[in-house]
Image (cartoon, rainbow, N blue to C red; front, side):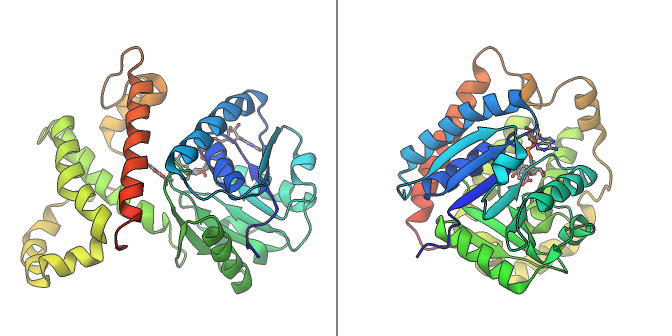
Length: 311
Ligand SMILES: NC(=O)C1=CN([C@@H]2O[C@H](COP(=O)(O)OP(=O)(O)OC[C@H]3O[C@@H](n4cnc5c(N)ncnc54)[C@H](O)[C@@H]3O)[C@@H](O)[C@H]2O)C=CC1
Ligand SMILES: Cc1ncc(C(=O)O)c(C(=O)O)c1O
């Protein structure tokens, strides 16, 4: 019998919610998508349809019986639900309020997972009545395409709940990675170490954005997508790592604040794809074309990577 809960609810339907829902529906679950904003839900219906189309393109396993509904009625979204994924904005107080709402509407044995990017689970669970059923479930964007999920128990999370979440993740064909709780979790700690250095290199004018993207895509991304960093150390040799790190580590950027260049871009309304300009400028139709290319690339890469020995 599949470990996938028959009825699941996604709370918050912005960038992440619709792709999460599409993944669960394809695996056979009845998914309710809840948001406080009717406008967000209307957009989410389109994003859900797009993500479902991508899963079809990918040819991922499908289980009959999956369905989706969208609602601004939280009680209806949670009625009879067996598994809840919270995906509201990354603000701890908002998340705590929403968790309180969810807990007041579901039974004590319902697992509540959070898609936080890195807020410690224990801090988020502080005011929960049953914190043992609460667990981190960090999907990566785009959630319908990146088949890895970080599973992070907090101090109060029941071991059985962590085990159940691992089985749920496996049931829809993703790779679960169990981690000890730490701010940012593993994926974003590594990503943000890379991004800090990248932004510093751009800010210092060492390389152009195009040059940086080429160096990282082919010199790092391509290689790491096949073998992973631990194996890379073995391939390079500890002697090489020791020799290079002895002079390089002290040179790497170690700023603790958000880079000024990013703060300035935000002030100028340059947020990236969502405003039509960021590190690069996008003209009419450019963002849609880029997203199409990125999706096609991720579909092709996932097919290839799935067919070779992992890490
Ligand atoms: N965007 C990304 O690349 C990733 C985001 N995450 C995490 O996932 C969570 C959601 O992120 P996004 O989808 O990017 O956020 P978003 O801002 O795109 O969407 C959040 C949605 O939550 C809704 N919302 C706000 N308050 C609500 C409430 N009280 N009840 C129900 N819905 C409410 C908003 O209307 C919005 O539609 C955050 O914790 C974020 O850090 C995790 C992985 C990747
Ligand atoms: C820049 C950035 N920040 C956070 C996340 C996340 O995982 O929360 C992502 C992502 O791709 O998922 C990201 O790209």
